[in-house]
Image 1 (cartoon, protein in one colour):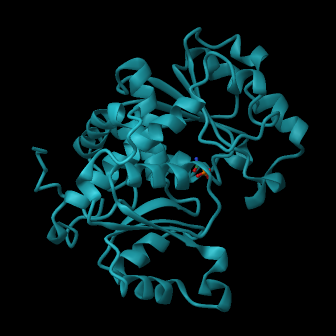
Image 2 (image 1 turned 30 degrees about the horizontal axis):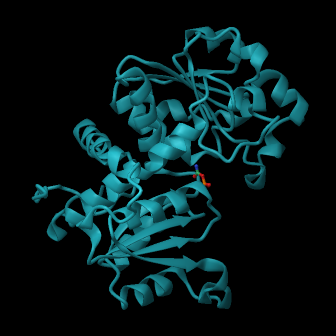
Length: 323
Ligand code: CP
């Protein structure tokens, strides 16, 4: 008999900002219980979402997040619908709210959504009764990425509290960094943001006063337990903020030479997709310090945990708290 938590206090996962330390720990602990299930050759192994319809609504491209959610949903026996934005009526000018209310008319239980606009998920949550999971909104949040990053770090070090974590690169455009800042600071890690001044907004200190900002990767690298490299988001205009790609790589690329100055057991993370040869070299991305593929593996039990906890939460809690 599965012990269903009936007082889980969340309705949506819109971001990490709203979560407490206990909420984060609960999700990570729940994910741990799904690790073995993910290795099971029998695919639909847990009946928790057997009667639920989950819609994956991706308005932006994705490889890792979309497939990882779909595997997680199928592992939990959900009925999965994949919405293809490129072949939908959005291309005929339908608004997001009209799309939402029309989807709602088909009574899905959970909507997993990625959208290019910050706040699109909050808008969606106001117009549908389905539970919403944010799979990335603009440069705002990517909560399940931060949760799987935390899970991966904890798996290696057994803790998050007190660890020195550098997040390096295109801080300005990254939703991954914002979700990680909320999560890591709530869990007691010491975060240093590293990048050229143009990609490292000083205002971030207003929201996260305990975070250190640095323009000198070589100066901080030896103190770090974890180095999380970020993708240069050229499609969002990163090229306009750097003098040249070669100048950027000279100062901020994680390569073997630079890694020699790091701790021997430093963990190297990257949310993907990689710009090999730009922010990280292949030698490092595929090297023995890299946990990049482990992050992808861990995405499945972490997303299973989020789906499971939200699916079993009471419907009436959402009016007062959004996860
Ligand atoms: N990390 C991440 O969000 O990757 P995708 O864009 O492939 O989903």
